Image (cartoon, rainbow, N blue to C red; front, top):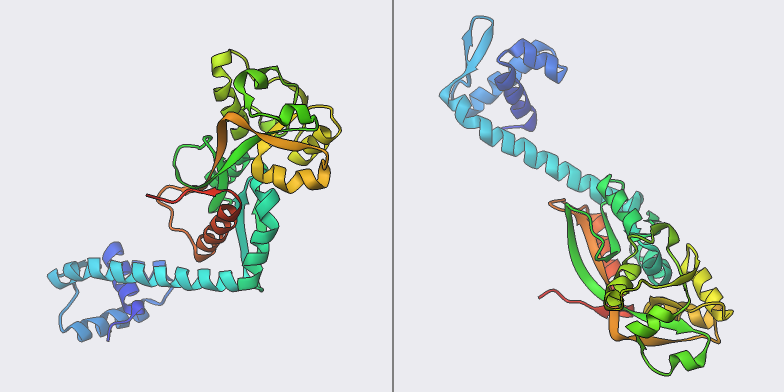
Length: 307
């Protein structure tokens, strides 16, 4: 019966052209490698190498065995990695990228979902802005993430899963009697979050496109980092804002109960997508997070189903 140990000794000898060099590469004694090769040859009923000087060259049988030995070793390594990833799913750390606004109204529920299935794991939700999360993806710090598009780096596989309407929020009831047009938006005094990422923030990109025909950009009176502070300032009547509807429904009752929201005209949306590196083989942990995050977001925002 063939063994992985025999095949590793065979491949090392094939690649090194010497039993002694193969033994050094594997960290074994040379007689041990020779014995493994002899046992393998006995199982196959044919010699695998000819001795030439101090080295060896493969026979025709050895040449035919090589690709199968490589495939067998590779399959065994893949099986080992799969088993290790399952162990990690039960007791290791699960990391997933999620930009700030989506995490705001799905993050705690997502962590609860993970721990309900795997109570022994440690969970890390990483990232503030979609651009931030993509940098972690590019550097391999995380396997997969949920971000807002259209800001997506090259080399990423993007799967849209939901869209979240952008709404105008204000503490002035008169501003909420009808949808806000591009002309009205261009004249508004706004507080906007994500100031560090203002050039790449998906919401601002959508608003700039909406206002393109007016020849103006959204006028920000106040710039802040987090959406919670922006909502509080709206509630104080100091400015209005445009934020995702999911965030408005989550935050207005708590932070700005006197404020309300209204749609834009035409309606505008942030598209939420699952992103990972193209061609990546995702671990069971990453696939689990994608499944649970998608379910959570689609329960809040308008689902996008693949065709």
